[in-house]
Length: 254
Picture 1 (cartoon, rainbow, N blue to C red):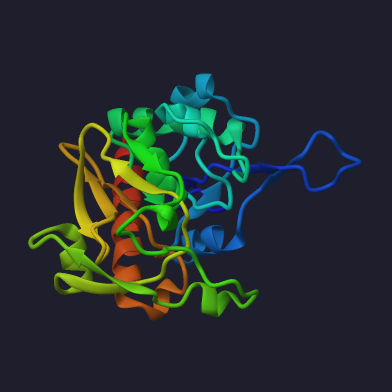
Picture 2 (spheres, rainbow, N blue to C red):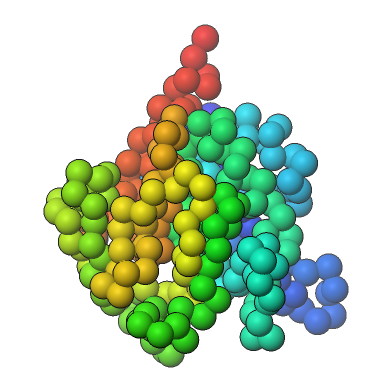
């Protein structure tokens, strides 16, 4: 591992993949780690990290990328009841709720993707729709039922971007096409979040953290997916990478 690459913490998910192994598995979708590597950064995992270790571990890294996941944020964390159909990951929830708040307080570059956006929102006191597709007036934001990843991650709908926002700068305008692979979505914004991207149905799709001292954004779409072929995704990911490089320089400068 190059000592000169900025280190990006990717919180892991936890699964019971083997019924004969009750201890479970720590997992991370390769596309997130691959995107980080393609940006010249080094992904790192702390598989058994708990909330109490977040302050110490943040001193070792230069950015946090909250990844998407098939699991949902537990609804009990925003005053609702989990659905019987929910796939939950309590270990990840416990870690990321603390990690979001600590990263923002420390001025750590932070990017939340899909579940990561929802984690940011809940960690800051917001709430979620548990099934966006069941809400009157909202679209079905889930991916098509296919095993073909290219179809799942294809551009699905437009997002409307706030004029003058970083999103509009990355997109080169106030409209962009994005993919859509989520069942939960933001209902009430968390404290300090500013909505700067919306789907055509009004659902919040992109936020920034007001008054953050470093890069701090969350998106409902997946900019890591083939970001080198998609200018909007690519500029978003590069802005995060640049913030991580700047943090690395500050952290390691004499």
